[in-house]
Amino acid sequence: MIRKQSFLGATFAASTLALAISAQAVAGTVTTDGADIVVKTKGGLEVATADKAFGFKIGGRLQADYSRFDGIYTDNGDTADAAYFRRAFLEISGVAYTDWAYAISYDFSHNAGSSEDGYFDEASIAYNGFAPVSIKVGRFDPEFGLEKATSSKWVTAQERNAGYDLIDWANGHQNGLGVQLSSTLGSSVYLSGGLYSKDNNNDDGDANKQVNFRGVFAPLHEAGNVLHFGLNLAARDVSDSVVDSRFRSRLGMRGVETAGGNDAGPNGNRPVLGGANNNVSGSYDQDTAMGLEAAWAMGPLSVQGEYLMRELQADSDEFQDIEGDAFYAQVAYTLTGEARGYKLGKFDAIKPANKQIGAWELFYRYDSLDVEDDNIVKETATRELGDSSAQVHNLGVNWYANEAVKISGVYVKATTDKVTNQVGDDSGDGFVVRAQYVF
Image 1 (cartoon, rainbow, N blue to C red):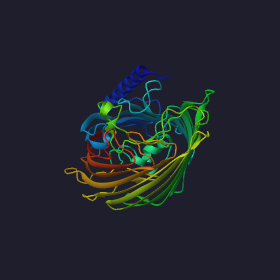
Image 2: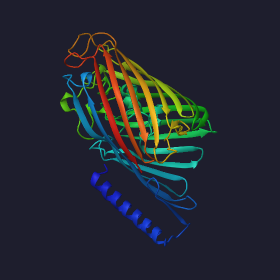
Image 3: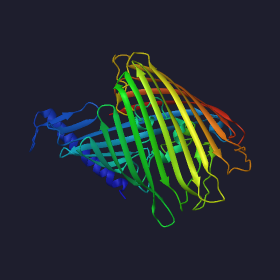
Image 4: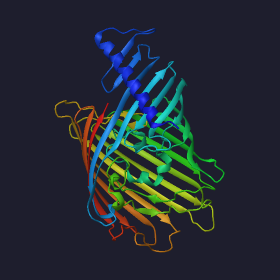
């Protein structure tokens, strides 16, 4: 286990070294035993040899959120608020001997990882000597979905679509280790496949295993001229394991429960659409997920959507399969005319053309979730019999003040069917504002 103190010490040492190199560069004297050194300070600190055989970069992101919400988002239906760091990443990445690369991303807000395994969003090593194939090993999120592939810095809404909550194991943070092969074919096709050993064990102490596949075809792949299609598959073996089978969602409101600071506390409500967290070993067998993605962009207009499906298969006569599906549709328009950036397989930043007023973007997203759980045979205070569903409307604005600062605001409206809070509310309203700085 990598202890937090050790990481902080290493980070301090790396930062001190980087500053020393930077100071020498300003003074006009740099000593090197090899190729010339190039120092860049725009968007973090980057130091590399001119032949790009060696180099490192120090960067990060800070996202400070404030939200206020009521109804289904709280147990008693009254208004609550939350002020928290959604992310506070320090990121160190680099290249060595041309073909080797590494990435370390540590979350000081503690929303990634855990106290036992370290609060790492990523800690990986990659070998790129078999171009165009890349082999990556370490801790990183499995690839699944367009919004997940897009950096949290540049997703349109503050929170990714609510449908991802139903498949959080398929593309969410994992504290085990994984190996992934990825490749581009020409300029229009991207493929990746991975095998992961999760931190949850079966009765014998054998870690649960997971496989992921993502394929993307983008015949149009330039900023402002995008046509994108994707397929995602994931499966994990949870046989002879105690597994949390809850299909639940924050419905776009992270403040109901977050690890990054103040949240709604015990009054925060994450509606459970199906499943339970009191299962015994052997209750379920295979957990599978499938996703389809599509996007189109022309100039300042972009449209995208995904369809997701999950099936948790029972492994006992006492239980029934649990099935869920979800989709979202989103439209965004940049009022100041800039196009969303695009790299094969994912969207990227909007770069303001006018440094005085920045770039202004309006967006709307509709999320829909449905869950079928025949294990529910008795009504409770928060769950009626029958298939449950939820819908979320997201209407917001993003101001890209410059390439480092982004200010966002979104109004969120959620409704549910067959699921309520403790006092019977089946709808809720809220808003989230975010100040983001990246370097």
